[in-house]
Length: 305
Image 1: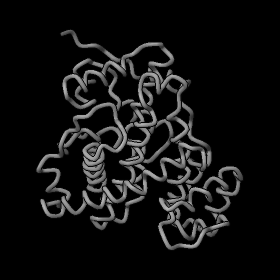
Image 2 (image 1 turned 180 degrees about the vertical axis):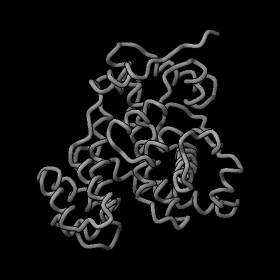
Image 3 (image 1 turned 45 degrees about the horizontal axis):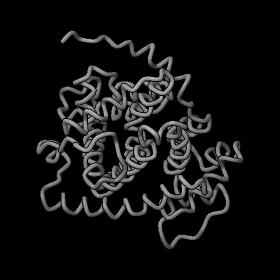
């Protein structure tokens, strides 16, 4: 079979016309949070510069998904920052912004973008859950990585929509017919790779190198094959999202375009220090976390946030 050369530069330019950009407030919050000396006042100034987004943040911040149970409701921006923390505030904004991208007039006739959104939010929740279980301080970073790990699939769907083609749908159907993962179907069909497309999108959005690395390599379990990933934390994030992605697929939360997730290798589980007993515990924790995530999905889909 002759290899098909894919011009990703052309695809990214086309995607930029069909996929919304992130609101300015996301980049502004990212810049503030990168400053180790950032104050609550600096974050509050960014939040209150966009009143409609501030109201949305407060509504989302008061859901059980973010606030948890037993905490008082927050009514002011500074209260939300104090209750949730800087990183979680940014994730509230990112979550509501990314959700808008999972909409299409033709989606439900051909493919459930709603199901893909549910999967992505599930992986975000599971990633944060596992990071907390493992005692990692960067659990909100794990949430961000999980949330956008499959953004390349949305891009591929939007490309099909604008070109009036069915390449993405064909890949998904082959997954179901051959019982293989979406990643393997893309390789089989020599289709544009959703992981690489997603990486280019995140790079264009100005998200962190950690996010770019996870999106680019969330199907690569062998660390030595992950080009330009040098830090232990970056590798741990990739390992963790690979595991969370598998777990959410196994628990059938949402639909990511296939039904045959690749099981994490024994080596990857060893790196995460998850033996058989801990594996059962963390899967039970993820299953409980997804119950709250389900409620949050319902609120977003009903337009109540």
